[in-house]
Image (cartoon, rainbow, N blue to C red; front, top):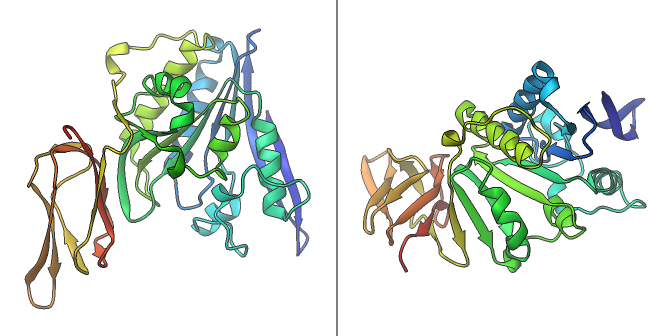
Length: 310
C-alpha cells in the first residue's frame, strides 16, 4: 500500500510529496523501516529498496510483520541529481528533527521523524559522495554503541565505525530517531551517482537477516554468507590528505589491509609526466575509504585507514 506522508504545495500548481510503501503480512506487530534518498546523489539505497520490495512481493507468506519502504526523502534532489534540496541550499540530513512551524523542508523533516517513530528498527541507507568510495559499513554514535553494535554486526557489512559523540551531528535523522528510543542504523556504501550491485545485494541479505532475528521473517538465511565485520571504536582511524594538487592514480580498492609505508597511489602532473607526490599509508591497517574522483587539491581526503595496531 502506497501512503503519502508529506504533501506540500509548490508554486506552479504542483506538489512536493514524500511517499512510503507499506508491506504487511501475518499477525506480527514488528515494524521495520528502510529509508533512503536523503541525499539526491546517493543511489545505492534505491536498489536496496527495489530488492527488498521485490523479494517481499514474491515471498509475502514468509513475512510476519510490517516493512515500510521510503525510497526518496529528498525527491527533488533525486530528480535533479543534487545532494541537497534544490533552491533551498539545504542538506536535508542537517535539519532533523525538523519544525512543524518552519520552512517547507523543516516541516517535511518533522513529519518524517514523526512517521518513523516507534519502529522496531530503521535502516538509514546512504552512499558516499562522488569523491570517495566506501566499503559497506555502519556508523554509530558512541552514545548508542551498546544497543546498536550487536545489530550492525548482523547486517552483513564489512566495517562498523563507532564515532565519538562530538563527530556525530545532532541534526541527522539517525540521531533524532535514536534519541527518542527508535533504533536506527546508518549504512554507508559505494560511491555517489553510481550503484554497486554486489554491495546492494549484500546489504539486502543483511536486512532480511536482522528481520529474522526480530522474528518477523520466516525464510531461511544461510549464515555462512553473513559477514563478521571489523568494529572500530574511538580514534583509531587515520585520515590521509593530499600533499599536492593533481591527478590521483591508484590500483587499490577500499576494503583491503595495507602495510605501514605501503604506497596507496600517486598524485601526478599530466602535462609534464611527473609524479608530484606519493600517498603513503603511515600505519598498518584496514582501508575502508579511498578517493574515487581523481582530481585532487592540496588537503583533499585520500583515504581512511583503521589502525590494526597502535
